[in-house]
Image 1 (cartoon, rainbow, N blue to C red):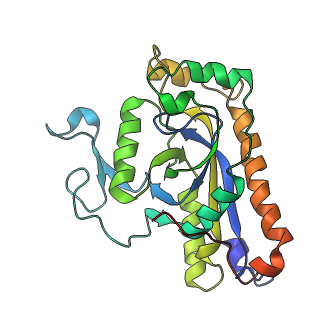
Image 2: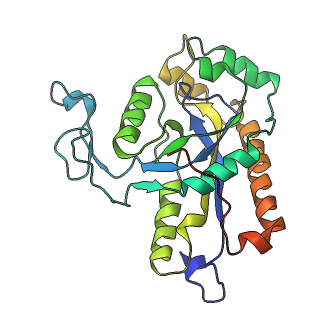
Image 3: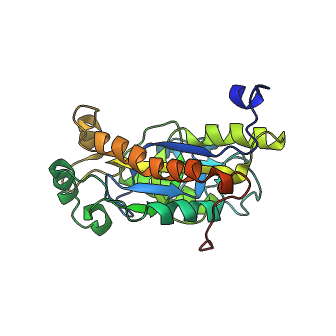
Length: 258
């Protein structure tokens, strides 16, 4: 907000790339993969009742604001407080531009992937793909919370829940406020997230054991994910900068899938 409101800068034609590591849903993708995000769903703005006190028949104690039960319809349309959709044509362009990149796949990543029995996507080599995000400030872990995240995403967004990260909704809220003031273009925002860890523990390990073992020094996906964020994001940045005479006034885009 401070940068966007500073009169020394004209950011009306600026492109924005948010890139960072994330938890990756093993049902959809593998560790080390990079996902271009179209839908971001906020996982923080909610009511919550402890799961040990929820009524019979409820799958979760997590409720949308203003609702009286989980996933109550109708979804509040146009509520930009908790659901953001980035320009699908720009996202498709970024994905198309980077889809052929070979991502780092060291032996340590292959060993981690081999533990995910029954998760074909989790065992595949890392790739660049399109995949959407649940964003929240709590680092959660485990199969039950992964299911809740998937349900929460489906309630508010479209596409498929692939990544979970922390910063996006705060960044996008600030940019949306700046856009209302005519200072930035919401059609020029990209989010890239790379999987540094799985959101579900491997076969034979509990969620508590998996979370305890997960640290910066012990997590083999951390550095490959950082490298992938830079490697994939840089191709997009270079393309825009090198072709600024075109992209200054015309957004890069390909027909979207939806």
